[in-house]
Image: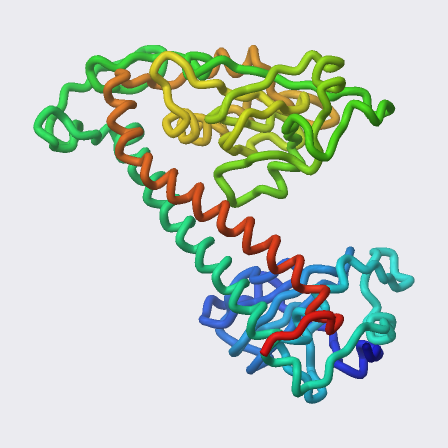
Length: 391
């Protein structure tokens, strides 16, 4: 396998300044070190492009085709030197996270140092089939993400229509409030709610369960294939997804007993209650969590689907009731005092039936993306090192 300086394969240059006050909404994406960060009515580059960050850790790369504005927080490719742009994109992704820095006060990426990195190299005539194959996987992942985003917008809209606007189907199938359904004032919630509904608190939705962490000084407390154990960091990595199966590391039976943890069932709604507050997911299988959670185990006719959106809608109130000097945290006791409007069980059941197919589809799509991501990440270094070929 040949190796070349990165600077002999692609040339990077610092992006262009564009302060917020100078931006005018237009069709051209502004691409920063974290991806698209807005749109502008002017562009600086046209064609296939590759962008990476100037600050922090290398490893996140963005491929773009068309007119765009590379921001000054990023480095962008000015010359692919006869190489296939998509191949260069995947070649860089295969390197993992490589830290380089200049001597400025803020750690950054010195493009001269970046150009000196030695990397494996495949001749241009073999680059296209490899890159196109990998790109097909990425396009399928992106398409799946768009499908799930649309499904999520649909499910959220249905919830809002039923439980925020109170236009759930009445006995004649017409929107309740808009069709003149009776509304009564509720003093606790300070608003009119449908007759037959009542005020309650978040604790009515299910049993609120906290978590804990076994001693990290004892390696026997943790396992690579043990009991699923979720941390707020895991939900951060899982951001954009609705379901979660496990975290980066499991706990062992010894750790489970030592920390007096509780295994919560499939369908439990997980809410990070500190560092930060507000990450959410639904457990795809039985899980435990660390102490950074207040999780809702459904009960009394309240379903995972209904609990998920009710808690999600209450997050601004939950954050407002949090406390702490080092970092904000919300306790189980505080959650038990946060008021919510509770519909009859049959209304929740009808809503669940209505959105259940959406949730099932989202779950399947997320699992498919996990498989595709694992396949891409497994193939990537071998393809880039020439260990396997694509014809």
